Length: 411
Image (cartoon, rainbow, N blue to C red; front, side, top):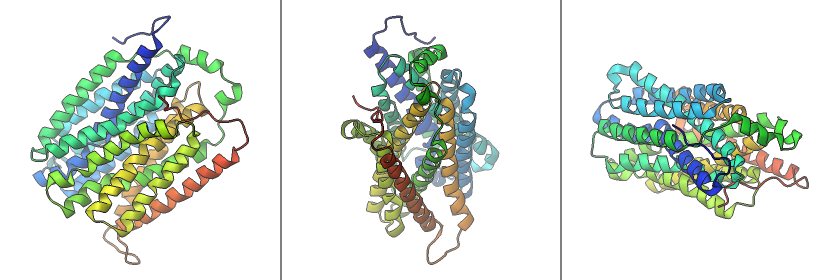
């Protein structure tokens, strides 16, 4: 049974409770449900449980599932906590199921990865919505950015388990991750304070009407968020596999993914210290520009050192961009941000689907001396640079107007 907020709550205690629950939820959903397949795919290829074709198709099924989850997350707008708990339970179940997925039962693997993507999107949208609303009710919204460290923590944990357990079978690692996801889901269910949509409407009623109902700029924000999805997915998908081609030892090539996750987690904390006074758009624009350096680097260098730097560049920016973008969505629709969060997450999902699809379309062909991965890197760098320019121009456009609320990550 969920804990409830008393009429005169200890705000510090309950805020900490919400933040920890949010961190655990995002660690499970994204670190395991979304991204565990990335470091495990090379091990499954090694074990012969999947082949390269089925691995690519399963990854694509996860992206499609994430899109479907983002589009349907608005089902839970009246009670996002319901979507949160349902999504977490789903992630745990499909993670256990992945232990018995092989290319011999191809449809089974596709369905599992699709379901994992759907449940992960539900958790990201619903956890963001209910955690931000609960923290707003307790006047502790300035601490909300901490929950997004969960994504990096989850990626780092899953990657480290796959790295240190590289001499185990992939099946054993899937079971281990399933137990972690199940325990985490139970923890969130028991520790998350109850969400009250009526309380959120009371909070929204105290905000200026224009702020609570404004829809201006949503399409452009969704496009920028979608480009970020395209920009991060190429290195996020192919870094461990590229590293494996250079060094077959799993204790070496497997290190790229824990580094990716560690950079993601630390970047959110760094933003809290160094960028606390910046507007969300300025933070988003800055990290989107830094992210553009990763595909640019990989376009000209694929040595191990370049892969490590790219992992840090992408891992160290995509969660800050995610955090700033989702917080900006809440600023745009503070009364109930679930719908806009869902739209932005859907845009992100479309972007990440477009990356592998582009590589699949180009296939083994070469144009102007570049293969499919080179073209994906080049297009990614250009799109990230273009959206960075738009975000910065939007920041300048608002110069002189009423100051925006700073990035809500300050401790």
